[in-house]
Image (cartoon, rainbow, N blue to C red):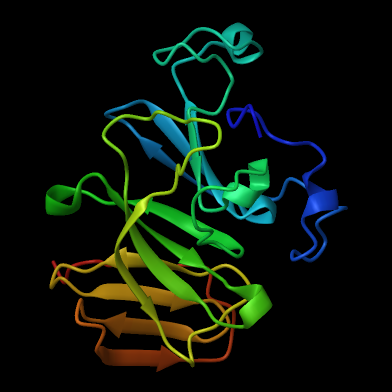
Length: 209
């Protein structure tokens, strides 16, 4: 709790909501790279959060608490989604299993989309979150991100994989791993759905040209 920059190796004993949390205690399922800030974002499913790492560190620096562009070595420079993962009593937990932290570009630069599987509730949610301008990870402080948009639906649920990407028309394309795809507007209107037999990891948008 006093060191949110560190990962609690005893987390599986604290977290009983995730299946296979003991034998798969550090399950990670997605990665994104912020080239302008030289940061790596990792989706850590079994602690229900996103870690942000300083990519500029050397191997030697990453084994310490010093070095790199952010002066923190291999420590987490930020984390969000589940303050319970480091026994933080401040902030509201958003993620219950998560996939695909998707950094946005253009007019949405500084935001990301992410899919929270919501296994305990059998209800999934897509969040658009605003990243802080400066990372100032503090103990006993609300370090969670601001939700700029979200979408859920009684029929939206996948306990595995899934994700969301923005479309050129401003809508959001959601992958529901056990179902198929949804296209929804910013006003949360469902305009198109596709279902087929199979397993859908992720979808991307391509223009006709």
